[in-house]
Structure formats: C-alpha cells, structure tokens
Image (cartoon, rainbow over all chains, first blue to last red; front, side, top):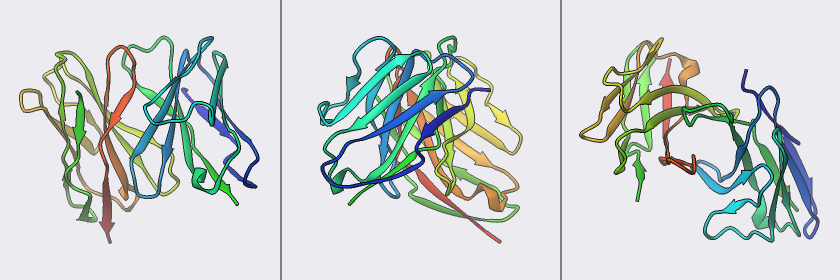
Length: 117
Length: 114
C-alpha cells in the first residue's frame, strides 16, 4: 500500500508553453502533498506544500505564478509550470502524507523529468 | 532553526562489508521522527528506516540499522553485508512538527565495490 504515481514520467516542451504534472495517491487519502525539485547530484528542494481544498504554501524564492499548484481532491495534486523556460528543466518529485498517519512519513512518486527546449 | 547535516558526500564499501553513513541534526523538539531514504539510479525515493525519538531502542530493518544518539543529535545508518543493489544516494530526513515538511540532508552517495 501507499503508492504514489506521477504523470507524465518524462516531458519535453517548447520554451513559453505550459506543462502540467499530476501526482496521485493510488490507495490512500492524502490531505497534504509536497512538491520538490531536484537538480543532478543534489538533494531534494521543497518547492511547496499542497493542502486539499486550500491554497498551496510556497517556499521562499519559489515563484507562485510560475509554479501553479492545485490540490483538488484527497488523491490528486497538480503542478503546472507556466511559460516554461530552459532553466525550469529539472526533475520534479511529489510526495504525499497519508491523512491517518501519525508518523510524518511521506510517500514519494517516481518523479517527472521536464526538459524545456 | 532545524537543520540536517550529512558530512560524507561519498562513501565506498566492499561487497559483503559494513558501512556507516552519518547524519546529525539540530532541533529543539523533544519528540520527533527521523528517516533514512534511499534514492537509486531510478530516482525513486525509498524508505529505508524510521526512528521515533522517544524510543531508546535503535530501529532495525534486516541489514539496515541505526545508531540513534538523542543527546548528541546523531542518527547514523549502518548497512551490513553490503550488496550491489545498495548503491544509491542516501538522504537523512527530519520532518518538522506541524507542517510535516521534511528537512533533508545533502545526501551521501554510496558506491558498492564488487
């Protein structure tokens, strides 16, 4: 149990276009989901915390107008990279916290590789 | 502010040998959890082991165990009988209470030599 999926796993888009990444908890409800960005050979950098039914909380330095997050249901959060540019190319990972879990454990999706040309 | 430090950017271990990855953290909380995650080349984050701070007994999961020293704020991971499949990035993580956000260390790349 506690499986998180991401779609797509890999996407290439042209500069100036927008791309949406989905994060789904497949077998549990997730009130809270997290979005991370990871550069090669580096740690995960938290971008924002997504709470079902409310606005996302963005980390300092993350452009909320560029990285739109919507947590529309207890099993789905989406990250939309708007007007993407080559510097947005990265590996994006989502995670979900099971609503009923007291242990603070996060379950991670497999990640999405975004390449902006 | 809470911080997590992994001071070993890279470690190597011979297959079947034992290796210890270090992690130190800083917090003013008295009750918390700590995690070790593994990220293999596939980049899927995999939970290795979890420790609850109020438990004095060190957590163990098969070949993986921790040495949790609460007073020293140290949380090291020991991998016994290392296998080629253990080669990965290992991240230590501290979840902040209330927000549930993880603070990750910078990671340790483990190489397993055949």
